[in-house]
Length: 193
Image (tube, rainbow, N blue to C red; front, side, top):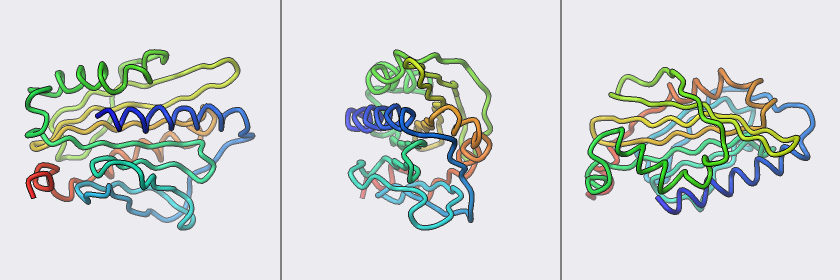
């Protein structure tokens, strides 16, 4: 979880710097392409015009998928935590979310405005809690959503952050990526092997 926090803080820094130099908006378009974490336990689909449309952070841990668009104005991070590995920190989605908010996301989200929101999720997800996020830093604004999800075998944290105009221009596409989340094999299956 600590490595996940480091990746998220780095992504936020990149987004804030990108918002300073970005002019106009980035429009996400193209054919749907599938991206998965290194452990191949889950995948998502995003429109991509070419192979370079989305950069996968190869330094992310096996349980994390960290994607940025080629202009670094959008960042998507998804983490899958097997319930058997979370048994000492979480007994249900509420306790997992509380743990993540305090131990993983606190530095990142403490300066953001959070607002409860409703979100559609894939059928294999049994429980969800979502919050829209906004961070204003002078003239620069980052928007996004953080979604905590529970399946039969795992907990997921799904974080989307983007420069405000880019988020607004692509909100439907970015949120539909959440619906494209597929559990390829339960995270605990990978962890046990």
